[in-house]
Image 1 (cartoon, rainbow, N blue to C red):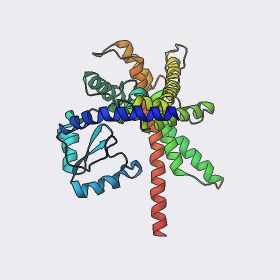
Image 2: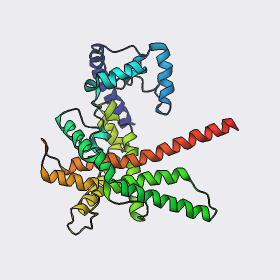
Image 3: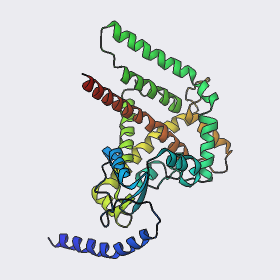
Image 4: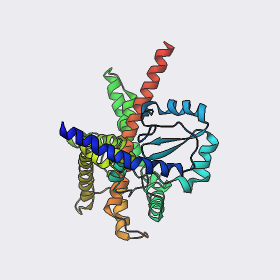
Length: 326
């Protein structure tokens, strides 16, 4: 009982000290109109991430195509018109291209060492150039054609086999598996579809990474006491466990590629081969570290899980349409 009273007292003192300074800070910002939130938490209590589009659409009817919200200590500006979106994403792209520094994203991207969560600076521009020239060029895409043909052939054989046995063919799952296999072979040099234990481990790591990337950390919205709350709820330890699993997984893949006795495909270099070669050549204005390589791999890996998520969305939409039609 005494401990609970002490906690209430401490939080009350923190609240009374921080709140006046917090309001003074936000009064200086020239923000678009928006709903007035509650003290301390802002509009967090109103926001439903599962139906964000409906929430924003409702607010746009009252406040117009540009509005502001407050999520804890963070100010958020919402754009809801094509003209304003073009202004932000194209005309003023250099002013808006930097992402907010969020705890989970920064940790899992090796402190913004990739091209997705990195701040807009010289290192980001060099990384983007690296990816465009060496990883996503038309020459590189054409060099992967044999892999694509081989994986498509595997899928057709599987469909033929299932059809001959009069079994149900789940085309959506097969197409997702096809894309996932192509991405994994291009990035890692392995399929991770017929690898047994390795397949389970690979998907387990990816699912955990995706889940923790989407998890809301208190620190992101309440920097002054969020880290303490994240430790209390177990989010911080969960993040570290996921990072350790992911890091060990990438270490094994990279060490496997560094093995001189590893069998290589002379007709195709995977993403790791290319990145390790560039690291050895030292042809950039910054030092390309193993953390940069792992961060780029993290982006490639999580794309596989997003493909599955998109597949589930497509199935849900189709089912909804079928029910309405029927």
